[in-house]
Image 1 (tube, rainbow, N blue to C red):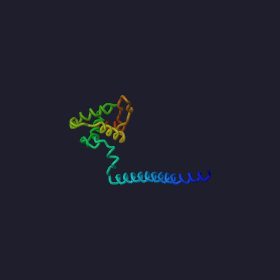
Image 2 (image 1 turned 30 degrees about the horizontal axis):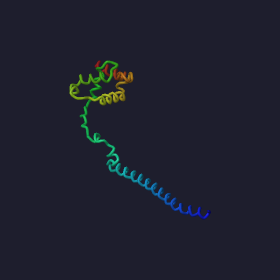
Image 3 (image 1 turned 60 degrees about the vertical axis):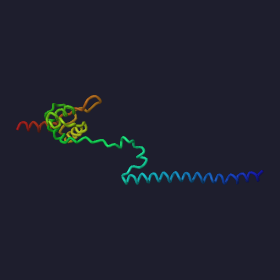
Length: 159
């Protein structure tokens, strides 16, 4: 009986060894393929070319280039002038209306909300205006002129 048991073990050991070897080779193959994929991504990054996976994942609609809207210049400069003519407090919609009143050129151009927000942000940074109340879900932010701006405009009016 002992002789038969050892014969069975010796017969299954080569199969187990082959099974372990096969598993090790498959595991190594997966690691090499993962490394190769990482290298392909790095090469694509440095060549500014999208990888094939990115090309397959990108829908065709994103590949169409939308024409950019022409930039409207001078919004900040006209906003500085318009602030002196606005009542305190004012919001971005009142500022936009005043911009069109002051400069007829803006009446025919489409001024984006982003350009108005950028002008307001820059004016707050330059301490020309300050935020009186922040925007909520239903109302726009309210702005007022800074005291130093009011004093400067009053002294300019007096001269």
